[in-house]
Amino acid sequence: MSSLPRQSDPDAQGVVELSLVIPAYNEETRLPATLQAVVAYLSAQPYSWEVIVADDGSEDATPAIAAEWCRRDARVRHLRLPHRGKAVAVREGILASGGRIVVFTDADLSTPIEYLEPARALLCDEWDIVIGSREGAEARRIGEPPHRHLMGRVFNRIVQLLVVPGLEDTQCGFKAFRAEVARDLFSRSLLYHNGVGPARGPLVTGFDVEILFLARRRGYRLAVLPIVWRHVEGSKVRPGIDAVLMLRDVVTVWVNSLLGRYDDEQAATG
Image 1: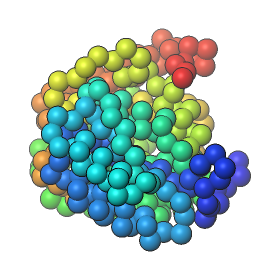
Image 2: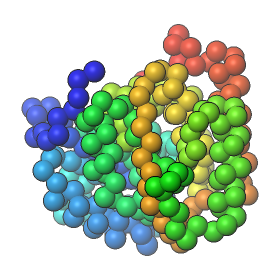
Image 3: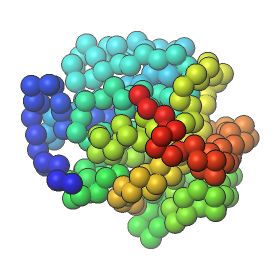
């Protein structure tokens, strides 16, 4: 597969070099600073870009904040969605993107925006997917509550046992893809795909595990990028119910695999 250019201008179809998808649910307190930082950073880069706020049915001022930024900068887009959870918001944002590279990151910027450049460099160097990792010699977690760290490590052991062995952090909210790879994976996902009903409250789930499972199954080249991650107050993760939902998702992916539901002729498309 040919490498991506390191710099490109929009072509006749409006394709840009990089699309950044930010899923957002009731993020009125954090979104203004996040968009300020993201737009300032990207405006200093030598390539074309867009930011997509994938608004997951927010009930606070998030839609107004996103709309105001759209008026201020045409490269910021607001994708207004019904509230169906982070998985659907990420998927819809990615499928609506126009970049040659597509990245999703959390609205709190717990992974600093500066990691876009090493991720982009890896994708330009023949990798298909880059995942941020809070584990490993060069990675650090700053300010993470002990119970969240314990929950994450136990969850990861289950993930490695059942679905994607060898990946120490599947849940970091920073992942980058070649656009065609992202579209392939998210169109084939079965979790939170067709017929997803309305959600109640934040819905943080294990959709990342399925995407990485599919990436391995499809033979895509996956690079792990160690990051310095900072815990930001106001996390949407609920230690009790979200742990149950994420575990359910992992088991569902494992069962789907055993039953052959990810075979090409049965995979979801669209």
